[in-house]
Length: 387
Image 1 (cartoon, one colour):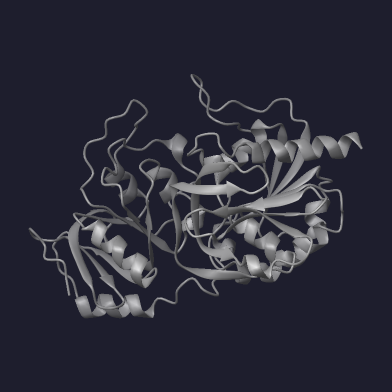
Image 2 (cartoon, rainbow, N blue to C red):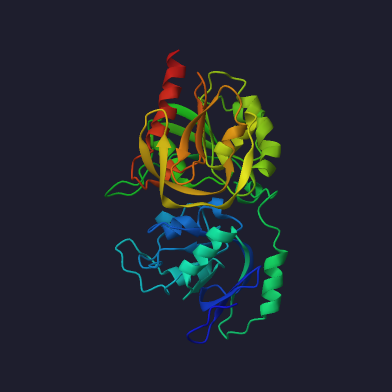
């Protein structure tokens, strides 16, 4: 079954079950295979495409106005797009925003990322919700020549994300320092010149704005690769350790990250804070387990309840795996849950400065609902020094 094109298609999205969506291609040409997810955010398409957590995925945007604000270098969350491609309802228009320095199609083309417009994204999203995140092949050919059988076969051959360690593919090649803080009017990103705390951030696919938030609460941040050992982490004599977001199956990344975290946790007073994959890594290190979700959580409008304060935060999320709350051992407290489906969104160790959340407090959809999590990390490090 295929969506009937209204004019000559130049792009084609083939699902592993044989469903075909035709549309108009933009960005790079060629073919790419990946898992397909959908994102409900109304803004931030550039941040989404450059979020390392989207490695191995093509993103369907449910909001139709994608590309209307253009692109600019300040909004990249990493050096280049990491998401494999994008699917949108309407073709991008000419950008209209005072911060824009370029247009989305050219930006994608220069970074070898394929996109398709003119797709019935509501129908596609309903299919993802009902059947789970499908494996797909996305093709863009200006001449509109597609070998459908080959594309469906490529989609079926895609291995999927389960059992896949993608953190090694998106992590930094070597350690580096970070001192850039959050964007502020009118000068952009200021520099942290008076840090109070020395923090080691383990990069499983870290977003730049997470590092900016750490710098903004007084941290002198040293970023280490995902494969860093506990000895390498502790050699920096940190006041706190941060575990970043990232892509792929947490169980696969955990093969080398969990032993490191367990060794770091032997210091009972050392503050440890994790986000997204870092949250899942912490849960695995404490004896919990993770599960693959049907279609995951991807968007900027997810309500999460903080069970310790009773408050509800509007959060940004991007994950296809979740911590199984039933697997958490004694002494590990579930602190946050999703009000969409009740899945776990936060944990902490009782009576210790160790905690993590599934959502992204740095993405500011609330806009400041969850920034307290960074301030808590700084407060824990202040308490450690005071004691």
